Length: 344
Image (cartoon, rainbow, N blue to C red; front, top):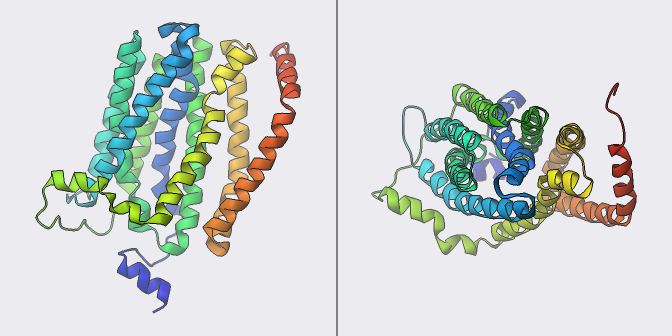
């Protein structure tokens, strides 16, 4: 037995190689989750802020809503994820949470779709964050539960692809509302798509081993154990979370405010944004697909840190170059507005 195999067995991690199709099954729910938030954050909520609080207050309204949702996600996801570690049911320890969360997502999205006041939209978004993270926290346990260490890079790469494809699918569905002027069907459609991917996950994934014993602890003690300060002793993990925060902060700021940029800075109308926002997200998808899988393979061979540092250095150089050509981009975008869409 090799050292890596012995370490994996000691940690309770599987050692047998998984077929790529099974890793795909473990990743499909990422598509549904990110379809919801891609459609809401990139299109629906930004557009509806104009009607709910007025254009002058749209940015503030979106910021408050996003902040409340983030706080809820931070509290719910690790807590429910930890509880699911010790859950024992006939379905397994993760699937009950995925089913409950996915069904409630549809209910709360229907609430968002039919709400006509800012307060009610905020309330349903907070409830949606609870239900979505109620499912997402346990779902994230599948990789350490089922994927052997040599395939973690591949699983992470496929997860990244599904996240981006989900955001594209969500933006495409949400864009229907930009063309029709009605976001009810588009918003509920996001929930139905996510529910479908949850059903696929529950039906096809074999969870394997059951959860460990609580050893006499109450469920409250299990839940609060997610917030123990002992994690601060794992310095490498803390640095990973901190670096992930700053890397994602940059990319999400650019992508999640694309509607405001197109409508405020460039002055495009809803129908025009509906076209160009899908073009932009499709380009992101293509570049992600072309780089993610090779990067995942390389990370398994060269190491995660080496590849991450190389990628961050390249991104910094590109952003510096793009900032210098910003005036040219704005000029080109304004010219694009004058194009006629007929025949394109």
